[in-house]
Picture 1 (cartoon, rainbow, N blue to C red):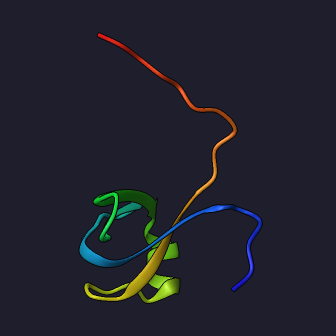
Picture 2 (picture 1 turned 45 degrees about the vertical axis):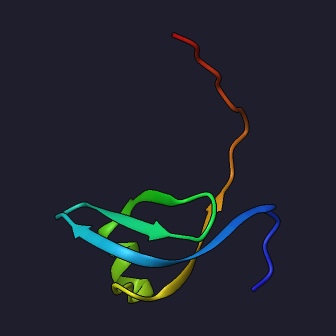
Length: 69
């Protein structure tokens, strides 16, 4: 797999919460921890995602926001 995004975190699917339109995929990795992605249910089904699958969380953002309380 080749991709232009440089922020790719390898992990395993820890949980999947499928809805009629969107699906939340919880990905556990050694570091930095856990990432939860919200994708379309159609995409989740096309990828054949299941708990325990090894996957990559690919993070592509044009900006990063910082907040302080």
